[in-house]
Length: 256
Image 1 (cartoon, rainbow, N blue to C red):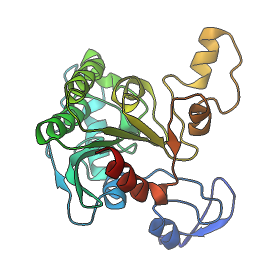
Image 2 (image 1 turned 45 degrees about the vertical axis):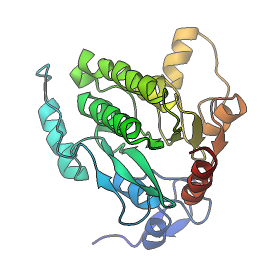
Image 3 (image 1 turned 180 degrees about the vertical axis):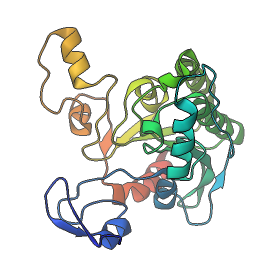
Image 4 (image 1 turned 90 degrees about the vertical axis):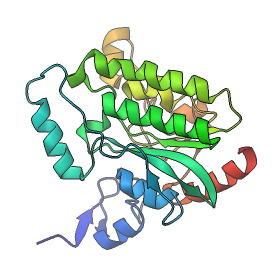
């Protein structure tokens, strides 16, 4: 039987699961932001009934014959109902047409393989060709190393697509969510004109332990949180999830 209540991992208070879903996975007691799926991102940020998917049906292959990868892909597809770790397309925010992509951490940690890179690049090209603002919501642990160098090449692919997009007049807004790491951070996620972030989102390239082991130095507490990144100039604004759509509407009204 499906549980009715869950215990918040941040404040420890019981949450009525219906209330949690109604608030797009934000705790009503302490405002802790839980992960949110890509389809729910679409529902949260885009005007109802306006989303049209681009690149639907793309599925990753197994170019290296990596042991167990095909099975992991199939399991992720069944678990999420998605083709891969990103949903992309066009829709409207506050009545304004936009190109939009949202990543889904449930799909093999939101890792960027060939399909994710292709769909993100396709979204960017759709924005460029249609003279549309671009909004991307990353959520990723980094490159999908099951695909080896094919995965790493997606950083170049998306960066080149963005360089072409930047020759136009429309803005790119990135909304960083928990977590945003690795090659996604190092390529398109932090190359936006405006970078927003959800409260408490972890943002970086490598994890804390890897950095400390490499540098042999102790890092400050919370150095990879959205709040720390804002203080040091990487993030422009931290926005509560339930206020994101309104903020995007106002922002696009100013700059698009």
